[in-house]
Length: 332
Image (tube, rainbow, N blue to C red):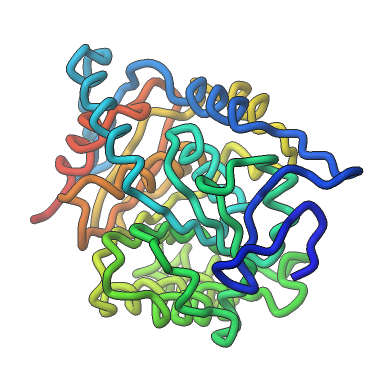
């Protein structure tokens, strides 16, 4: 594959690693900057708001303790054994997922249509930790089982706009992205995957009811629900995160360090529920963190959560606080 700033790798004709830039190719973002950025966005103890039957239920949490630091150390020890495939890693949520994975030293492989965009966003990375695989989930022929070689976990953040827009150019409609794309991806996925985390949307079970039927005029909620159902019936361990209306971004600049610092402290108090009852907004940063946390929390397997956020402190990257938050809303 001929691609500016990328060298072909032996694993697959379509798999390339972000390596040292050839002469004349600028790679503006470094691994160290991404690590500092994600750490800045996650620091501090945060307030939790958990919803079971009603979204008003709020649970207060104490500041991080020495015990939570030990839990963080355990998570770091697990990082070396993971290889996370991120699908949609240059989108609004996906780029934040990738930046956070890199800051945690978790090996990451991106499946995306345009590898050059990932290089401009994430810059030069060690090839053993950061891999790029060129493919389009809308086209089943693009998806080779080789792309899952060594992969332990998958986070899928693909999506498009609910209404016709420039993003629909090139057949990028909800049906093609949220239904065909998810079906093709999951059909290629091996049963050895330890967890698939899918980002979906609140309102998918009510797309024939007002006001959701307005958002669903072109089928976005219907197709997301079809994608959810395909995941649920696949036999692959899954967690589905239904996000509210997304805020904080999407970001188009490659300088994630500046962007993450600029939004730190905004809308980090997490409101979570089940049963498709929540209505509201959620920070993309919160959604990204929820996806990463769900990878290692056993109780989230086979569960579907709705997630919103409000201004204030929240769980940050503390796994114990996320465990309690997820657990507090689970029906079983």
